[in-house]
Each structure stands twice: as structure tokens, then as C-alpha cells.
Length: 239
Image (cartoon, rainbow, N blue to C red; front, side):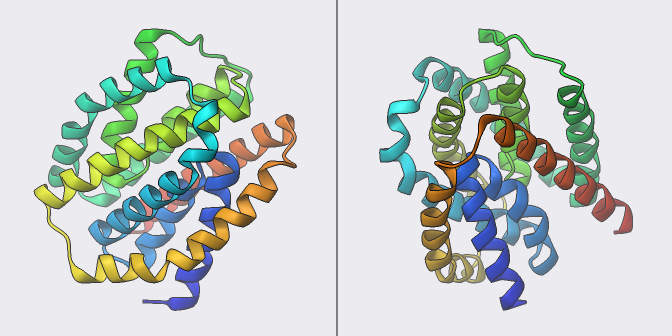
């Protein structure tokens, strides 16, 4: 394991997760795939993401939209088994290629000011899509990020609702993956040594969140999406 790269990935991703509500899995997963096998990278991401959501839950619970959260949870229950079946059938390169195209397309739609009207049915669909992406590659953020950004939701509600949903979906995905494909000691050891880095990232991310202007917040989301999509695309084509 490249220790320096691992430290940088976890620290920066933790800061982004805390300050935006999205950044950890979107930034960490593609880079963890460089130094770990796919299942190891995904499960490390899931374990650390659960810890982040638990650590922040008390602070963000007042900002949670309970109705949307419930619909996300219901939708995700249908998406979880689809994600597990997908990762057992397709290789990681095929998954990365498909996801990169999806993120690129939807990000361009957002930049062009395309807006989604939030509905109960779309809440369920987005929850299902996020569930399938979490159990397959440990990355639930893109569908919710795109959906909430397009709906012009307040950043506090966005962060609170997504972190609460992540606590559920990451936990269910980790349990499902452990049952379906197993786990190993290296996954849990690497996760344990990352704990101090995550705690430091949580602290720094909270400070950053207070100073993020809404317009800067939205611009940063676009940059994060484009970076992730292009990186996944390159990785899938090179490999």
C-alpha cells in the first residue's frame, strides 16, 4: 500500500465529505482503486463513510428532511440487490465506464441550467439508483448530488438529508457486500489506521462549511462531478 497516497486521499476526501455532504466516496473510491483491489477499496470507503455519517449525525439532524429521507430509503431497498448482482456480473472497468458517461451527461445538463422538479416518484428513483451504486461501487453521491443541485435545495438541508441517508445506505451496502462477496483483515486494518485522518478531516471540513458561499458551493459540486467522471472514464479505457 502506498501510505502517503492513502493519507492524502483519506484526509482530503474527509474534508470534502464534511463540508459538502458528498465528497468522500466520490473522491476516495476512484483513487483507492489505484492502491487496493476493487472489493477492498469499496469496503474501506463504506466503513469510513459510515463512521463519518455517525460522527456528524447529531450536528446535522435538525437539517434533515424526513419525508425525502424516507422515500430515499424505500427506493434504495430495491436498488441494493441490483448493485450486488451488477458487481458480481460485470467487471469494475465496465462499471466505471458506464458511471463516467452518466455523470458527464447529467453534469452538462446542470451546467446548462436544466432543472429537475422534485417529486415523490423521483425521490424513490434517485434513492434506488443511489442504493444500486452504493452496493456495487460504494458511490451513492452522484445521483443525489445532481438531483438536489438541480432542485436548488438549501445547502444545509442537502447536507443533512444526504448524510442521514448515507448512514443507512452505507451500512446496508457493507452488510450486503460482506455476505455476498466476503471481506478480509486488510480492509479492516486499513480502515482502522485511517480513523485519525478522518477525524482531522471532519474538524477541518466543519470550519470550511461555515465559509462556503452558495454559488461557490454549486460551482464546486460541478467541478467535483466533472473530475470524477473524467477520471473514471480514463481509468476504464486505460485498463
